[in-house]
Image 1 (tube, rainbow, N blue to C red):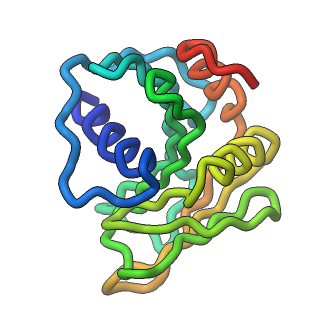
Image 2 (image 1 turned 135 degrees about the horizontal axis):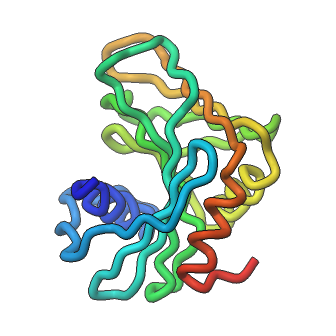
Image 3 (image 1 turned 135 degrees about the vertical axis):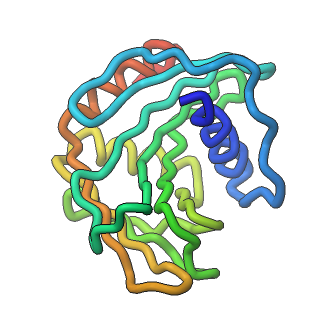
Length: 177
């Protein structure tokens, strides 16, 4: 898990400006502390120069087509020192088709996420908050993406445990709902 803060840092930096970064952010100097888990969701926190960062991750229950080498995950990140909360991101696990969106369906609510490389983000902070609220109330989230060179993929996430993991990062980063 030592590399995870680096991934979170890259995702959060891009999400902060809502523009993908051309160069990765530097790795954090302190490793993530595991706050706890609920079902398939795990909460973490770490400190960096700008302050505390809290995030949760979850892996899909089902990946279609099944691929042994493709690792995908969903994340929500808070950066209270930068006045940023509820940043939603999905690592799809393969290079996405340039200019394509990832389609996210949370309990019938549909969202389009912009892409860069193998990841996808909400376009605005308001959309981030709406998606997090939907995920906290929903039972399932389905992310569909289009890779550069292979057939479209679908990742299905159970949202059981998501509200509890969200509460853990909210508490750790003092985020009020």
